[in-house]
Amino acid sequence: MTRILVVDDSPTEVHVLKAMLEKNGYAVLTASSGEEGISIAKQQKPDLVLMDVVMPGLNGFQATRQLANDAATKAIPVIVVTTKDQETDKVWAMRQGAKDYIVKPVREGDLMERVKALVS
Image (cartoon, rainbow, N blue to C red; front, side):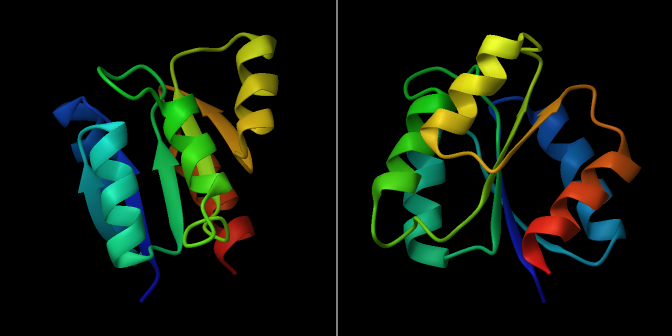
């Protein structure tokens, strides 16, 4: 089963994303901070990471950069999922190593399309 790590400090966002993913047949791991997300990604090696940007401590851009630059996790695609909808944020996310960028609120069809494109 394809495993997806959801990294978001909002329990509500985690619940919404987890419900969408599980309904579509994915196993879901969760982390509530960038630091925890990196730790889980290294230990569990998920097939994909959904990364929030605005979090206390290590933000999503920093966590994405660390995952992309670490030999143990650089093959894991990251989709940034955030409320930040400026073009500069999207460009910056891609420069940090993200493979895609989704602006919240997430539409299920859109999310599934992008997830399938990266894990198939």
